[in-house]
Amino acid sequence: MKKFILKDRKLSIISKILIIIIWILLSVLIDNEVIFPTIKSTFSSLVDIATNSNFLIIIGYSLLRSLIGFMISLFLAMVIGIFSSISKTIYYLMVPIINFLSSVPTMAIIILALIWLDNEMVPIFVGFIMVFPILYETVLNGILNVDEKIIAMAKIYKVDKTTIIKNIYIPSILLSLNNIISSALGINLKMVIAGEVLSQPKYAIGSNLQLQKMYLNTSGVFAWIIVILLISKIFEYMLEGIKNLCIKSRI
Image (cartoon, rainbow, N blue to C red):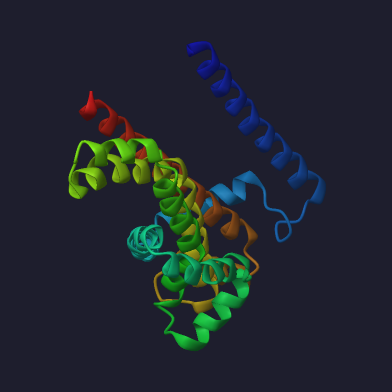
């Protein structure tokens, strides 16, 4: 097991080194800061961004929008998913809605959100719409995939419904969500930032990306991309830490 982990880490390091080498080669070959910035200019822009007095406020607002959209999606996915597993009527009503939300282009959702909502709410709405179908289907599948024999056995032994829900259905839902929660959070953050780019709230990563683009400051765009990647990585480590704590608490 340790050998595989070490091998994965080596491959990850090699991959990162290759990206840096390709970046250096492309910046030298293109030799145009507007089209493709150097690592030096990108790092300089990253320092400027990080030392800006509003940096943490910008990050905080974007993360807050992402978290609000995600929590609303998760709550509604849990509630509607549970009702869909109980009622065939709700299940079949949700099928075309989920198909529509899964198929509609992101840009169309952002444009509609810009018409319907104020610029602060647009990113939250976009994040919610894009993540809800994923979470809903995960919750529903988590319930439907519960072994019917286990439920039948619980009924034979006259186990009350509360205990069945607590000890059978909820663990199954959480196990299903555990497999996609990291990617769902990542998608949500990206969609929120995409919404911010067009809605232009005062404090937002997306607004700053658009600002850098307007000034043709490509190194600034690259710097903000690095910030987004770092945030996503921190999310992953935090989730991994929470998962490990949960596992240890059970042991």
